[in-house]
Length: 120
Image 1 (cartoon, rainbow, N blue to C red):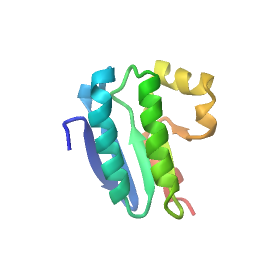
Image 2: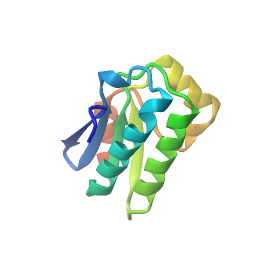
Image 3: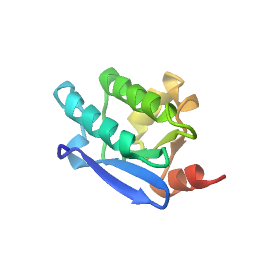
Image 4: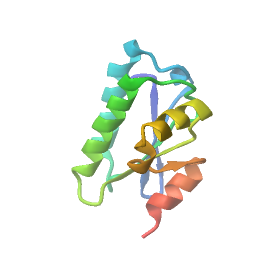
């Protein structure tokens, strides 16, 4: 794994935290971030995944493509669910304008996201 993603467990939920190096997600970082996220997603059991973007202030369409790949991987497993948390205003706006907030639940905090995925 690269230095971009921290993999944490909170009960039955796998939390993928993009660290401080992901403040501005640039094109050159996408392959490493994508590989890290996909590897962690494959290992997630049960397939309940929160991606914590608290440190991220900017991402572009390339990162949205990475999120789609991760989401597709999560969806391949029975009961698979993914949500995002900690989005800064700009990042939240990008997902809302593109209506991706309808596909991926957005939560203000990691605790909210974990609680939502943990609920029956």
